[in-house]
View 1 (cartoon, one colour):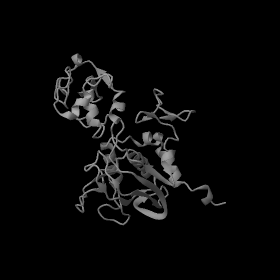
View 2 (spheres, one colour):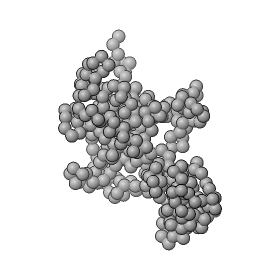
View 3 (cartoon, one colour):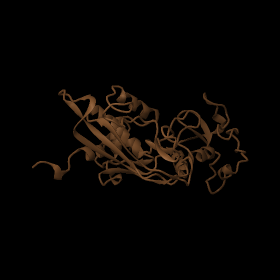
View 4 (tube, one colour):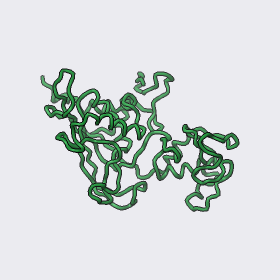
Amino acid sequence: LLESQERVFKCIHCTKPFTVDGVVMVSSQLDHLFRDDALHYEAPQSLAGAGKSMLDSLLVVHPASLKTKNQGCDCPICLCPLDQRASVDDEEYRPFETTASNGGDAQSVIKLECDHCFHRGCLEHVLQHSKPVCSICRKPIQEPRGFCPSGRMTIRLLKGTACPGFRNKDGTPADAISICYDLPNGVQRVYHDNPGQRYSGTYREAFVPHTPEGHALLVRLIYAWTRGLIFTVGTSLTSGASNVIVWTSIHHKTSLYGGVHGFPDPGYLYNCHDSLDALYVPDAAACRAAGAWQILKKSLLPKESDKQP
């Protein structure tokens, strides 16, 4: 990925603009999210409309040509033949009947990159209430998107505080980088477990080493935060409390002084990258191009007023 003179990131091979959720990404795109020395995430009110917009760029195929290697000729959602209009009695599916208002395309057939096919209307319905992944193999349809509530992420360099188990090139102990997540109380969205009910906020602090390897992990965590992938609302596995903010599957180290979730842990970077891979978070190079590196530099580099004369 390269940055052109127009400050639009483009692929080095095909020069196609790099996009996030269908929007061309420029180097200052995340600037409006970074304010008050923190990276803000605003949870969407609902996922309605998201499914339609992301499906517009996908391949539409003729039902007569379908017999994929991964499925037969039925829509996996409504279980009706792909070459017929869905005949589901459930009231929730009635809006997806072919009408003039939706352009007559609700019964067109969408073929995903994973080779699975669906009625467009059925897939739109599912995407309004769940993550944008294939209903069969769970591969993301486009950008990964999670159910994190609104909050702010603050990144600080802890100079003089070592991150156990990591060293600089000169052999000195590597400093730690603090990642603070501040998520206030709120009301659950329609895509949470109990829509309309209040949930309790939380404040969490995690750490990564101030090394090139730590930076590569941190830009992926920044990307995951801006896509709502790090937290969700549910039931705590430790306390059993419901309607609280809980971690998702992305590994974090919350202590610099040992313990199950603390440093030192020689396998932590690998394990965290592995959990990000499972959520289809792009690699560090792509996350840097999406603007995560600019956010990291703003957080770690000293302000002009703090520099020594």
